[in-house]
Amino acid sequence: MLTGAERSSIILPPQYERKTSMVYLKQLSWVVALLLVGCCSELARAAEPPSDLCSLLPAAMVSKTLRYTYDSPTKKVAPRPFRNTNEGTDCVYGSGLRMLLFRVYVDPSASASADLFAKLKSYFAEGSTAVSGVGDEAYLDKERGLHVRKGKVRYFLDGAGTPKQKNDLAVGIAGQL
Image 1 (spheres, rainbow, N blue to C red):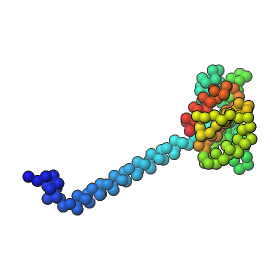
Image 2 (cartoon, rainbow, N blue to C red):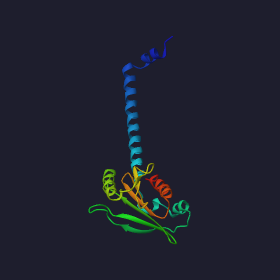
Image 3 (cartoon, rainbow, N blue to C red):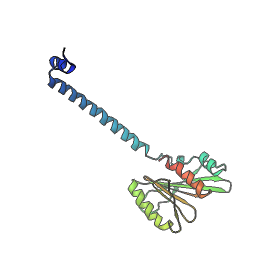
Image 4 (cartoon, one colour):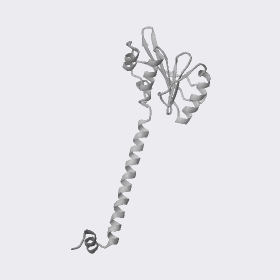
């Protein structure tokens, strides 16, 4: 009685089996490579901020967190922090006498964003407090404005709300980036 290995060498020559398995491995490696490329491109696309930056902070989230009813944001162009940098977007949420400013900038890259964040921090950091658990880096300035950087996006929350409420809003925004 012949074993499986002996039987296969009688039916098919050993070099044919090796060629078949090599072809199979080559095909399998192409499938794996295509899956990796597809997954990586999907991850890169997910990291891009939305075209409507105010949609990162819906009025319903602001109302729920700050415990007052806020209107949909009024959008304006935010000034460039320095020459040759991007303009930002101001999203202003109002509720009677209460106002919350969400100012957001999208920089060309995460490293450019980190450089700008550090440069701006030199102006606003005096008397500030580091905040952990929000984005890549964050701090609360002495006027209780929350500055956050996540990837190539920098944003600022100022006005209504306690530092904890602003922190909660900032965590929700960072989770979308």
